[in-house]
Image (cartoon, rainbow, N blue to C red; front, side):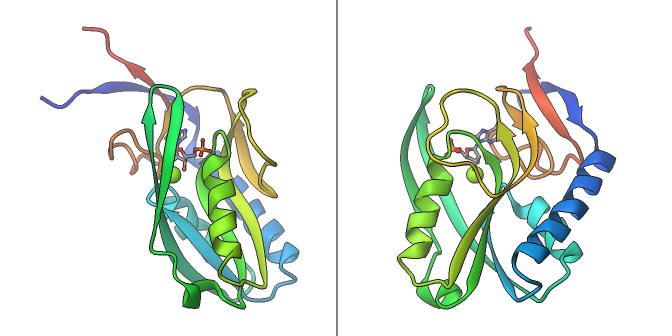
Length: 177
Ligand code: IMP
Ligand code: MG
């Protein structure tokens, strides 16, 4: 049987919507209302990117990249990156869009990969940032919300592929049976 979890709401849908609208304005202004190539980190930023892009006040392109890290316990393993090819980003002004900035390893590696392909510019955006002292590197220029150091799902974020469709962000509490 499928494992079920109790999801405790941390950020409601309306609050997310308001903040994403603000972020869209901040991002558009930071790119001088010129064309932005959103590089959406799949699959977690799917929902966020879809909402953000529709509220941006500038021409946009959307490209995707898949990033998967294999973790054993708390240690983050090697990061695999798929789907990032030169023509998607060369000479474009790129905004990397991820769901959550945790240690920052994913974002740092993706910036390196994108920069190798000759973009005009790379900025970074994450809907969420986890608050703890295991952060490597500098936080993204654009952050939606800070969240506590717990596992969160919803609005694109998953637990083993599940809960991405929840309209809110919630904390996962396993049922103790
Ligand atoms: P980082 O490389 O440690 O910053 O991890 C970022 C990636 O880990 C994100 O792109 C997410 O896919 C995943 N991740 C980290 N924390 C969570 C969480 O609480 N819920 C769901 N995914 C998470
Ligand atoms: Mg991810």
